[in-house]
Image (cartoon, rainbow, N blue to C red; front, side, top):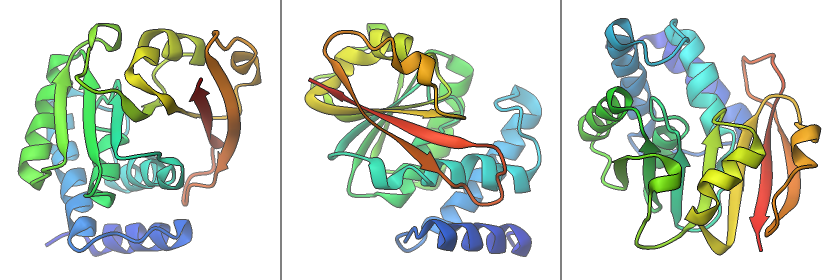
Amino acid sequence: MKSADLRAQLARGRAQLDVKLPAGAEDALLDFVTLLVKWNATYNLTAVRAPTDMVSKHLLDSLSVLPFLHGERIVDVATGAGLPGIPLALACPERHFVLLDSNGKKTRFVTHAVTTLGLHNVEVVQARAEDYRPEQPFATVISRAFAAILDFLRLAGHLGAADGRFLAMKGMPPEAELRELPAGFRRVAVHPLRVPCLEAGRCVVEIEKL
C-alpha cells in the first residue's frame, strides 16, 4: 500500500496548483516515486533522497509548468531521472513526449520507469541535444536546470518548430541570461511558479522561436 502521507501531500499540492489528473495518474506518480527511491539507492539519480521531498521538488515542481506547454509534441532536454517529462506525460496522455538525455544510466532508469508505468505516449532517446535530429520538430522544448539559457538555445534550438516554445525551468528569474538571447529567439515572459511545499523561488522562462 502506498504511503497515505505521500498521497495526501500530492493531493493537497495538486489542488493548490489546480491540476486535474486523468484516472490512475496519481497512483502512477506515487509509483514513480517508489521506483526513483529504489533506483536512487544504487545509481544516485538525484540528490533528493526523501520521498516527501521528491513529491514537492520533483512531482509538484514538474506539474507546475502544465499551463505553459504548447502543442502536441514535447521534448524534455536533459531529462535526467525523467523530470519534468514523466509527471507531465502522466498528466497529459494525449500529448507525445520525447525524453532526451546522453547519460546511459539515467536513460536506462527512465526506460524502465516508462515501461513499468505503462506510458504509451513517451519515447526515450539517449543522445546529446546538439546531435539529436528528430523526424519532426517539437512544439515545446523544455528543460529543467539543464544549462544557461544561451547554451540551452544553442544546443537545442534546432529541436523547436518555427513557432515553437522553449521553456527553461529556473530558480529566481535569470535576468542576466535573458540579455544574451541568440538571434532568432524572442523572450515571451518569465512566469513565477508557486510550488506547494517548496519555499525556494521558482520560475519558467518562456521563449519563442521566430
